[in-house]
Length: 122
Image (cartoon, rainbow, N blue to C red; front, side, top):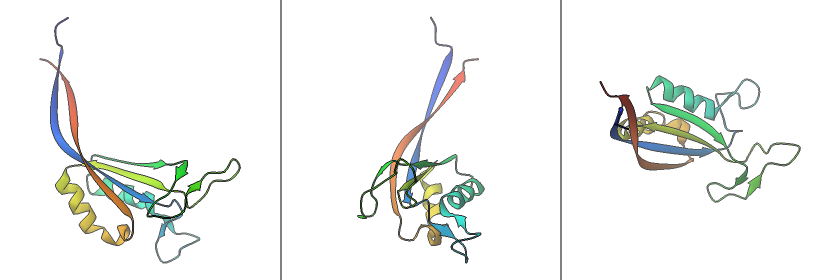
């Protein structure tokens, strides 16, 4: 069967930001405060980042803290959540420099990836 599609490759990066789902932003830390992970994703969208998602974890630790886990009846608001951003390295670097006030003491990891685009041959 002949190839009907082409694959284009380009280098991109992935930034992983580890935080607690209970981390909030704003002057009111309890009622009315926005979850930080949602604000990071909203900000990434406004900054034209190609992809941004929040992923919950089930068991683990972050920033040398204690091991946490979700219980069978109640979720642990301090168990790590991961916000993952995918974009050009320069774009992700700029995101961190612009929004450092949101990232403060978070564990942040960068990894080089390839973005593949599949197109039908003409």
